[in-house]
Image (tube, rainbow, N blue to C red):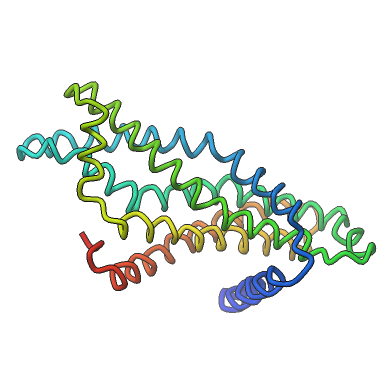
Length: 253
């Protein structure tokens, strides 16, 4: 079994190699676009549905408390700040880690087990640059876009829930939702999802690309991809939140 410290070192070297290879030709544009479609488009419905449901639940839970203190007008503000600052980026990343991370790990592990990667290399093609780099880039590009869809789906779910309770209009809900929302509450939390995307792509590709356990390693690679990338996302999120508060003090609500 790999030592945890050794595993961290290997994943870091794997990620460094990904960054270096991404900066050199050829850029495999077709592969990148294909992976963006696979990772982004096919995750869109899951992200929107989850965001919509979370938005409704968040409004239902917060409404009782805010109404008790006479702050019902703050429900849209709480909804927007909650989603744009933390719920949207973190939940979207965990959903993508579960759906995409397991897929990347399983696909690459299966290709390794069936010697497809060896076949690609026998054609003088850099399998790492052809298989790994496009997947990591696609995760980095797709995460902010998926996060935005989750954020606005959450707002829509919150509006429908609040409209059913108080009859608030859509224009008034949006006005109150964005009234206290600064650019620092929107740009920085959304931008940090590129880091989450890099973690998902790198960790999942590492476990799939480096497996040496044959067919048995496919399931193990998929499981490890989800578990490790999810844990890293949660840990890194704590660090990034502290960094955002340091760089943008006005976002520390």
